[in-house]
Length: 465
Image (tube, rainbow, N blue to C red; front, side, top):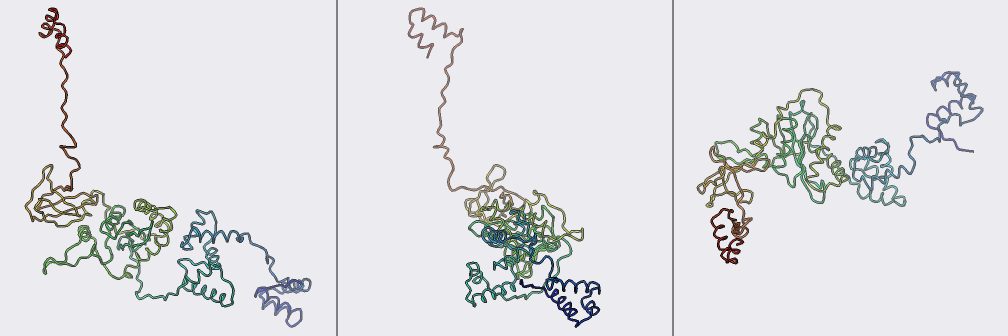
């Protein structure tokens, strides 16, 4: 006889009806305990007498739901994760399953499947990792053979103690009230580490600017800042790391304030407050954003086969637009505190690199490991040695030098001439064309006369040169 397994609710109903049949309970008492009508209790009693215990088992028992995945589909999902989408978090993996692989699955289904197969994911909770570790250790303790995946999972599970020494704070009320800027070094693409510079709005969490560079440089932060100024406007305040790009504590004179860096000078001209901190938790919004980007951006760039800086910066544009559309908070208040958006010509004059240089004895200056000559219109300017000039480099790469109110153009003095005017372009003597005399020219008459006199050879030689 087939064994009938009941759920706890079904078992409870079975025991009460069984007691009614055995006359240990009345029908009225059973109706109260089961919260059913007396008529329905009588119906259950009659069905039990005819068919036995199986009456209380649900009719869909052992039937397969149409939503259940077969074993082949489950194996395909696990194989895709291990082979193609390794290191994707579950939510990101489900997005690509639905969009790219055309597999309509839910987050809960995929998450449970990966946990059951003991597959580690980047965003897995510590409690889940500990539970998985206990399961695998218990299986190993019972001398059961672990699969290769389970062995790899057991070696990767690491206990980490949760520490949170810095309290959380609320987001800013308005968009543009505070921007957090930072750079992260990572293997974002290719085989060499690069630095991703970003600016994150504290109110919405949107990425307002992003740029890849080989190092964490002023140029990288200028590119991000220019994106913010062009697309959104001038923010109220910027919070960054305490780096010499932003904060420089050398004083020119004890009575004068601290000197401004190039980035600080640009913020000063725009009226933007610039604050720095050496504590990562103080700008947790941008730090948390990098954690998400390291999970999503690296994997998507790998799928797109991006290996160079130019393509990576182009990919950032569409990635940030889609990222902000899906994950940035919607502005509840229609007001944002960004001031006017700036034009490229204005940014060219604003986001510059300014350094002081001294004229050498060759009437030139040295900047960026190159020698430069100074020109006014088309003439070279010969400044006296040891004269101090202010060098200005714009975002487009143009170089100027200023002394007083005079603006001079800078040209690179090359180590060798590209072309020798004497040897590469030798002087060629142009051959003059023979001039043919007119028919009534006096020479013609003399030649004709000599020809008539019989000196035919000489006449032919003169006529045909």
